[in-house]
Structures are given as C-alpha cells and as structure tokens.
Length: 488
Ligand code: ADP
Ligand code: MG
Image (cartoon, rainbow, N blue to C red; front, side):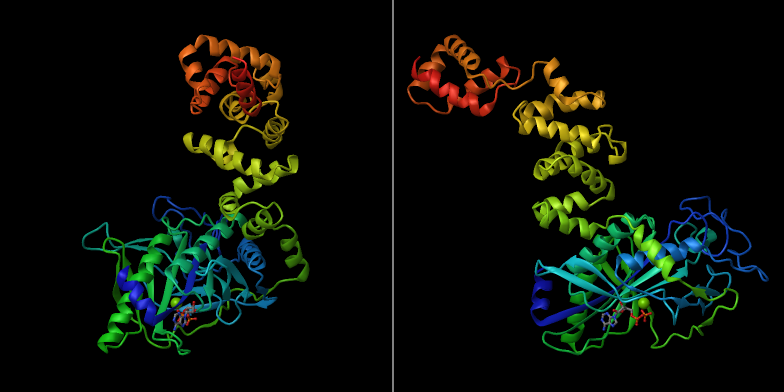
C-alpha cells in the first residue's frame, strides 16, 4: 500500500474495462441448444454449436432485446441498422474457426454508467460501445495433467461486450464500476452477474502516465479475474509494476497478462501485436438487422426501475442517507419490496430501518430471499403506523409482534398487540401505581435513587417493562418515575 501511495503521487493511472456478460436467454444465440451453466460437459451441443459444415445460424431475438434494454438503461445510442461480422481465428474451443460478433456496427454507441468516484462525487463512466457476440467453448487445462479438455456447452452462448472509454482512475473506481454494472444487469434480468461462474468477465486495460501529462502510457491488458476484488488487486499490482519499470528505464511491453489469485500478481501470457488480423467481414449467413423506433420505445416503456434512479430518489425525495440508499438498492428484490412499502407509509426512515433491520436479519438467518418473505408490505406499514401513533413501542413491535407475524402473516398487527396486552400504557395513573409498588418491593435501590443515584433509572425502567410486558411507553414512564419518587 505504501508503495502504491508513493507511485500515485507521481503517476496517474488510466484504466479502461471490457466486460463480457453472458445473456441468460433460454437458448443460445444462433441455435436452440439450451443455454445453462453447469450442465454435463458437451451435452448442450447441436450441429450449429459444433460448427458442422453446412449448418446455418438462426438469430435469437432475445439477444437483441436484452442488448437494447441494456443500451437504453445506459442511455446509449441504439443502432437502427446493423449487421454481424465474422472474427476469424483458430482455437480448439472455437470449432467454426470464427466468432460471430459485431465490428463496424455495434448495437450501442456511447452511454454511461454512473459510479461513486474517488472524490466522493458521482462520476460518469463513458461507454465506447456495447456489441453482441457469441461465447466460445471452454478449454480446461487443470483437470488432466497432459491434455487440455474442451467443453463446448458454452459455445454460442450470447454475450454482450461493454467497453468503456479510458476514464477510470483507480482500482477503487474500477471496483465501483463493476459493482454498478453487475447490479444493472441483475435489475434488467439479462445476466446473473456471477463472476465466479464466469457469466460476467472483465478484461482490464491499464497504463500509467506522469501526473499532469496528457499522453497515455503504454497499456497492458489483464484477463482471467473471477471476482471484482481480484480486478482491483490486479490493477494495484499493475500500477506498481509499471512504475517500477519506468523508474528502471525499462519498456512496458504491450502484452496480455493473466491474474494469479494465489499470489495476487499478474504474469505475462502473450505479446499483443498492434493490429490483430482477424479478417473481419460481414457474416453472410445472417441477414442485417433493422430495429424499429417502435421496438425501441416498447423496450424503453417496459424497463424495470433502475438502481441508480432509485438510489437518487431515496436520497433526494425520501431524504434517506447515502448509506440507506445504497443498501436499499443493492438488490432488486429488496428495492422492489421497499417501493411497495413506501406506497403504504410516509415514514420512510422507519421503512428503511425495517428493511435493513428486522427483515434483512430474518432473511439472513434463514438463508431466504426477499421473494420468500411472508409478510406483505402493507402489514409492515401497519406496524410502522401503530408505532408512530404510540400504540405499541418499537421494541414490542420488533421483538414480539414481528415474530408472531412471521408465523401468521395474515394477522393484523394491532390485533396481535391487543390480544397479548402489548398496547402501550400511556395511562400515567396506572403506571404510577405500578411504579409505587416496584419502589416498595426494592427499598434499598429506591433509597439510593432518592439520594440522587440517577443511573438506577435503568434498573427501575427494566422492572417496569417486566411488569407491563414491555408495553409501557418509555417517555411517559421516565416522567412517571420522577414524579413518584418526589412523593415517596
Ligand atoms: P482491444 O483491446 O481489442 O485492442 P481497444 O483498443 O478498443 O480494444 O481498447 C480496449 C480498452 O482499452 C478500452 O476500454 C479502452 O478504454 C482501453 N484503453 C485504450 N487505451 C488505453 C490506455 N492507454 N490505457 C488504459 N486503457 C486504455
Ligand atoms: Mg481488449
């Protein structure tokens, strides 16, 4: 870290990310093989996936739909007329000998992802493009000691590649960017965002230049990271490595490097030539696509609420803290539940506290998702309402009514409180009688309290709560204790 800070005083990192996101369509991009993770190797492989000669691809329209929705969510410009291109290369996990992708006419141009920048303010990460393509098969090098194994289940799975401008400045910004993209694809329900399973993958392009310089340094590309945290680690490692090379007067090679999670370092994999010779040409087996304005509008009209919009709404309109807004929008399910809840109550802070407190702990303890949560938002709103009207105390609500509601979600919270005598006692006369009894039963403590030992308030409060089963209103009780002790 010390090394990194020293380097950062002198050099400015420049980072651009390329994210490949596997689209969770039911079938593959150009044939009806099933698109699923974790199937027995080489079972979802028809003749098209296997690249048999004479087979023809058929475009899966959901690929287009998902890509358009992503582009709209990023405020990209959607390309209305486009075609696919062949990117030719030879590799064992690419049986056709080419990948169907988009070179000259990506489905989306421009757009942005908003993140929290290093200065704490919102920062726009500009996108260069988003294009549609297909995944290759998977080469497995670490099962057999001698041979590479090939699994072609993944061949032909639809992908979008999201490319940023070189505008990220640190490991932390890259971390925030990836977190936002993952959240977005999950909200849109187009990709599960699972980096561990490879359904979202990230290549990092990184260079450094002297602070104040306008001219970018030589970049390298790091691949093969299976977590957002590892992307951040790879960036920090590279920043230091580049600075050391520059200080030693050695060149930074234009190369592709691999991240090794066991050592948190990167190793050179292959030198990258300036221009790849992929011999791109328009894919002759697929017709060009035309996207109508109506189609785009229909997608726009059916977008779900987006995480950044909700984040802003919670801070600006509901006046919640940044912390609350972040937690509430972390997952779509929680946000959607909260959206329902705030239709029923205007006490937004209480609603947020219920979400992040009792509800989340219950879900965590039982390994459940919010979709499995049995209590309806209206019922939680009723609970908030009877706390606000001081009919029950907050502790009775969380510790007593809530657990009973979990067992009987259809019950009315106020009825539960009434049936169990948990309605707050605001009747100070009745309270004073209870307090007097407690003073009598605890003469030693009462004497000390009378003599000014204020910390005994807690002791008496506890006794009173016990006697009233938690139903005494704390404020009324505190006042009543002080009143009764005067005349005792
Ligand atoms: P490719 O990796 O296929 O050569 P590009 O040349 O379009 O593709 O660049 C890919 C990524 O590299 C983009 O995200 C871009 O922002 C980033 N990039 C380009 N130049 C630099 C640089 N000097 N330092 C860091 N990132 C860079
Ligand atoms: Mg690249």
